[in-house]
Image (tube, rainbow, N blue to C red; front, side, top):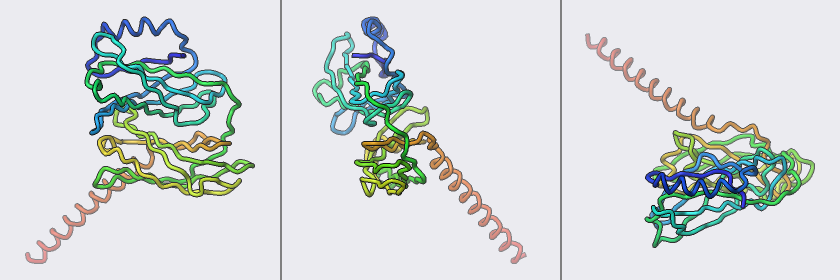
Length: 263
């Protein structure tokens, strides 16, 4: 097992955490790094641990599995849960979001800290040939966050089992929820486009979202890394602000004009 970093929950015991760090520092820490992690407990009493995993090696990695080890206030291991990274292959330097679920509802309230580690197998690099050409998003009144757009396959072969992965961040840049959806069509012919449109339904988290990033993945290709992480939300906020200002200005002019006419 290759430890990359340690994620910290609020309110954990510092002495216990120091002991865990001491034990884990004896393991290799050269393959992966964790960043922007967060956690929350949902209405079913499952704990979700979110974050991003970066491949620090000079080799592409496949079958990457994230392991979260959960401890109580005395440093006792309560449980371990594993889950694959969202990207099927991580080229050197690539970053993939992840989500690990703690499903032991009887002990979830005893969790005081957790550590994260990851393993993977070396593989051939995956070509970067998927380009996200447009996107938009909206949050509805029920807390469902919708993301849609288009992606083009610039590769010479078809892209099969294509999907879009959304990483959503809060105001501090931490990952607060991860969404995913297939493209339509799911198999994209060479030099053709596909659409995507999917909901992120974790309503307890979506209200925290301030920006997001998108990844495209398929059996053959991954996304060309040039998509802006927060442009859409920033522009949407700007447009709403301008509309509010214009609306107020219009009302002010109308009121003033009406007053003058009576004078």
